Length: 292
Image 1 (cartoon, helix red, strand yellow):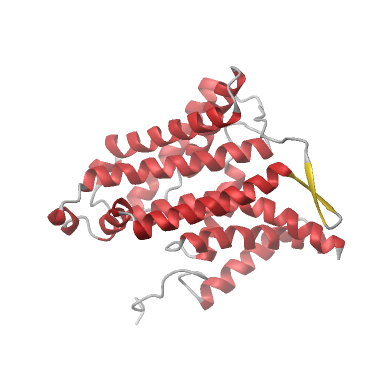
Image 2: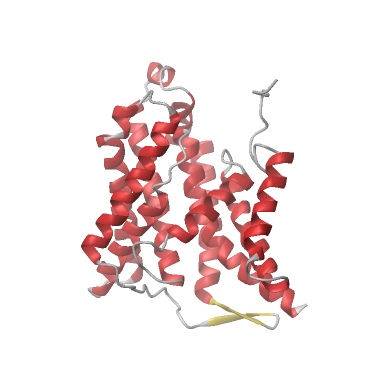
């Protein structure tokens, strides 16, 4: 029982990091209908800025906000300078652009801050809380709580606020929202800034748990995308749950079978979920079958 609990808690911790990045994926998709593969680069920029600010003696919260703000600015500029001029382009072109943006940002981060491994110190580092007979780092509990709060706030924002509803409407149709007073270009810029902000949050926490270098997000980008697909790209709660499920499945597979089985177990989970529910576990029900 202790072994199962250990693997489950460890999986929830890793899954919380997946959830943060998956929520960022789901948020920008919900707002733009474009899978943003530059999310990892937003996290890298934020983490390096946070590390730079913290290295000058600033408190963690100041460094975190500086990093998230920098990533939000990058997202805003990406829309103003490029995405805005690509409206109406095929989705595949937009996806390729986000891949290119990812390469530009990670290469730029390496040129500015170097490729040496760095570390961000999280609050309460080295302190533990005991759950049953398992010791869990306070920082891990903090990340779990933060990921839940982020999912809650984003869900409420898109469901109840005027700006959130305008953002969803703009993603669905970019013509008619302007007829009711929605500033479509500004809303799109906000969507990309929000993507940078959330990606930055995930990047800083990930660098604090593991390490920081220009490629640190590469390992987490595909699992986070998979988590968003499992939960459903149209659902923020689905992205949150998908990250936790993925983390637990990975750790249980590694613990009870072997580490290489994490890839097989996650791939099998993704295939089974998408075969049964193509929209993901918590995604909106498809209104029509494109194959019919």
